[in-house]
Amino acid sequence: MAKTNKTIWRNDEKACQDIATGSGAMAVTFDPEGSCKILQINLHLNAASATSEDLVISLDSVNGTAYDVNVVTHNMDTVKDLIISAHDINDFVMFAADKLTFAWTNTNTRTWGLEIIYRRYLA
Image 1: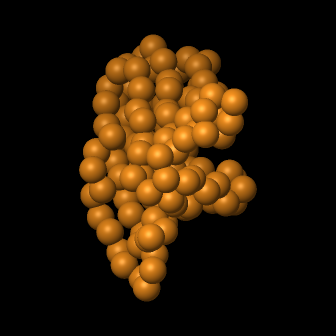
Image 2: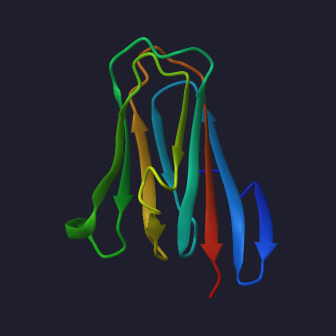
């Protein structure tokens, strides 16, 4: 995953944006390098997907595989833009050393841009 692209400070918190792009299969790991709350996930494709394939977003928990969970599974057929808000994922919070993985087969080789907006909690 790309390093933090933009940061906005506010007292003991900061809002951050991480981005990744590609045109083949998506295999992205997001590591916020600390505790955070996911505010929004944006995915844009250069053209709508024409295949029934799932985008799977999963938590790789610092506590081990017994605590890994599926956060979102979304069928990408006919999707060009996908916005997942904090409300959609129940104000999802990650702890230090937790990671999010993004996987999508992308058989049609659509060019994609992934943006993760999150609030990092400072120690």
